[in-house]
Length: 553
View (tube, rainbow, N blue to C red):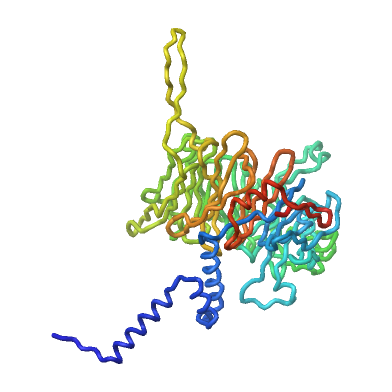
């Protein structure tokens, strides 16, 4: 049998093939041209995703380098949030995007009793109509030492909203229950006054939690965490994804439904700015000195959602279907992780994960932050990316997706000793897996916008250590780009590395509370790296702005 095609059908098939090939083009110029022609305008996120794809190709191409554009030092902690670097306990904000440091705002100095303790970046929620125009712009929720909750403009530092919390306890921590939706303000470990203690008054309330909905800022409730309710062995508490997580000293972790607790034990629903009569005191909710009342009073043990025992309270939930990771609650099991089903506590097939390593710093495992349900198991010289796959209808299997290894030579050091008779004896011994002289993984993170794993690898020989940042494919683990850090890296110091699109930030904490910040920016078709190193050795140009000194290169 012979098949015949008309010329029109042949040309149509050819045109379709060419169109398909063009659509799959990975060339940056083609992508930019198609974007200009409006190919990616069918939905709101398409252009953004294509832009990030283009940026990823630029970041990873061979001719691209990252240059240390400026450095500064501080005697107070340095924080980073979405393109902004914060100094002086969040009172000074500097842009990390510009080639030279640009101070966005500098708030007036304040006494130590009013310093900012913690902060969260608030961004505009998607699909909601907000009352105030300022709500559509990024802002910063900050908690002060004198129990005020401020919402500041991320651009100018202007106070947009303020809420006075309370005077009966000390609030210290801000965290997300649901990112960009529900915020939790947590107190320090509550202690009774010395006079009350001497009088024999027993203290059973350990913590206070104040829960707020953000943008627009509204009060949900405040509750006490009482040992009489949750048990005398309770040591800590947290909230995440609508669950109240209570941690006990024996390694026990218990989960409760916060929504059910608030529905059952809320005495009165209150709004910010509302006039209120609470226990004989009249005031405005959120105003000084009235603050916000403790309107959720737990009088009985809530219904338990979930309970598990784990060494050092190691516990994490994730995956699909839902699983959790623990370490069995025995010291002999340290470094051994179990992956179990949340539904019935069944151990997954191949669910016992142990990395055969001998190191000072332990290996760690967590669910991948890319929401793929995979797991990251990180040791000193090996990164395993694990995934859950269906073994049968009742059980999932933990399988290896890919691995990333350090570049090491498999050598064994020899130590020679001489006996009294003059005979030479050689002893063979093995170095620790995280010995400073061997290339070691120190930081592993995920850049969500570029879909890259960022891996910091360190080697220290003598006093000076060297480090480099590798960008690895999040799907296959392939090394796509390596960026050397110019500054010396001491493994005994504390280090944080942030990758944000085309900016890399290294924050280092040295002894005596000396903090350093190194800002790297992407440079395409730059001059030879040796020229950059020469300029670095010669020193940069000192630049002073509002009393702060920067070294620019």
